[in-house]
Length: 193
Image 1 (cartoon, one colour):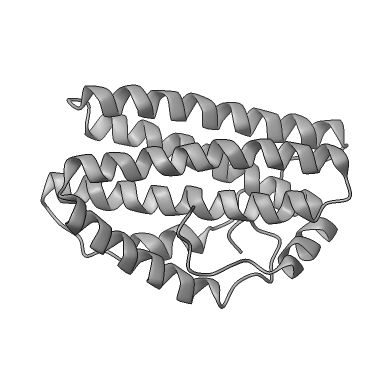
Image 2 (tube, helix red, strand yellow):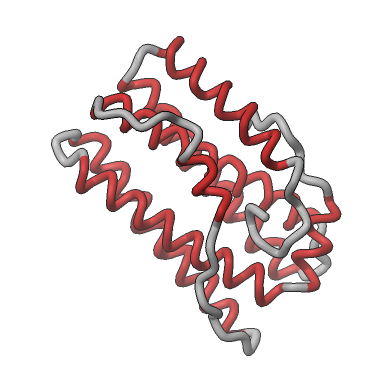
């Protein structure tokens, strides 16, 4: 369903489980960044009414997810750590050449956001299915569904703003790039690590 070309090994879930405070901190900050990205799209493409409505919903939902992760941490006696660099998103953003064409820039941005959501969804699935902790397993299974919805929203909007064939060509190239990148990952307690 997600179209990802590389599957996360269950060994990543084992690394994440033994570094729970780290993975939850990373996750919390990713939710903030996702909300921030949606707000930024609103600011930069405010004339796109349907897009603004959907990005508003996503921004609110992502901040709700941040709050949920933070409350879960507090409940477990954890403290939200400091934000750490996320080279996953940075590397994805470098995949496309910079463009001054507003529509093309928007499509590229939407495709990157779709892929981040798809990979998060896949990681949440792996985590939830390999978690003995019932509360966390259920928590991540529910979030997985939300991430899948965000993925389809971003991808659908990309296909709305540019010819489907062109968008799908860009999407497939981005998926292949990300799959190669993911082969080097899976060894740190980060959602995309």
